[in-house]
Length: 317
Length: 155
Image (cartoon, rainbow over all chains, first blue to last red; front, side, top):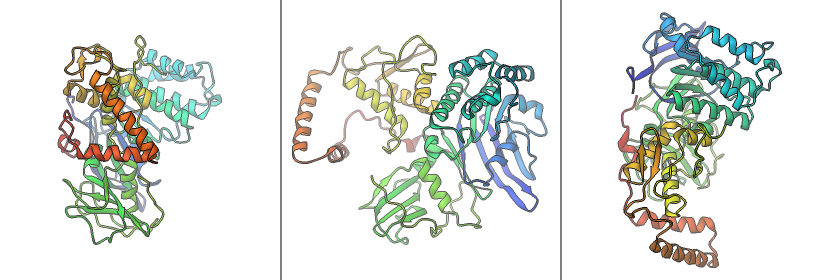
């Protein structure tokens, strides 16, 4: 832990676009050195949150502090110390890779030119190539390299692996994690690739319909959730001390995500620690369209009858 | 993009089973224990650097740190600042390979597995029986801490 333990602190952070909310009443504290997953359906507010953290979008209400300062009001204290990678991966398509690196070098005080060259060489991306001629995966690598060479304390990545094939995805994550290991960078990244995030992230923020459904240390969240898999049970028969987050039932079998502090038992059923994907999907299922969710950490997790896919899921364990 | 900082080749390669339900740090700990039990790793061997593990299996660096810390607490490894983390075999002064006793146990287990096979059990059946017996018998040397005790503080 360094001088400031919290890298991003938001409180009641909200963004309104005309009559619709981009983000509502968002509160969380992201500690230094974490790799945080920002997940949720399209349009749930992930990009809005990242853009507010990057000082691009102005909040309508509430507050956001990045590295102790407001990214919009005190940009000098923040912007040089963060790296933001937009979903669109903005690059000058007619530039050569080497020219893009020169732009980065001219614009950034802490620029690490040797590292930028090393990454690109390892990936076999020729410096003389025009950006527009590179594959999508290579363009993603160049954008990430530009971000990493800034040597940021905080990286904000908006769907960095979207549209990449499995190999490119894995290479991009390798470069990212290698750099994070060397530099101790804090990362907030949005993604739909839930299975990939499981062992990469140690902090989780779930957004849905512009609200935070759940936010916190992933290991603590895992410890206080259990996946019950067993013979079909009645939904009034929730094990003592637990709350039902959401249920997927077949004719014969129940698969329930439960939230409980402390141990819970259900004789005759398996009780396993859920994966990140299982936690995320259970919380998103819990959300019927248009309902009002509660804030992170709330104990009031009402059970929604699961309209999406009763009967779909048969788990083999 | 394989070995981070060159010189020493890693002696073992970790792998992760995302479907096992076993936490990632625990899988790493188990794989080191396993490699030591089989004599693949011996006292004085250097474990792969955190960076090597992170880029090999795309895993959170904190998870690797945690696994190595756990091995140190269990007396199975020792960190040497600036050099890395090294294997220490408990009890025996740097024995090589599996001990006689372990060899006997392994032979017994092999004949048991063969029996299970001729009794018609498949791999899953064998694993289920094995896991069930492990659950019932308390094994010595389990590091007592559970993930639940550790970081309770949320947000």
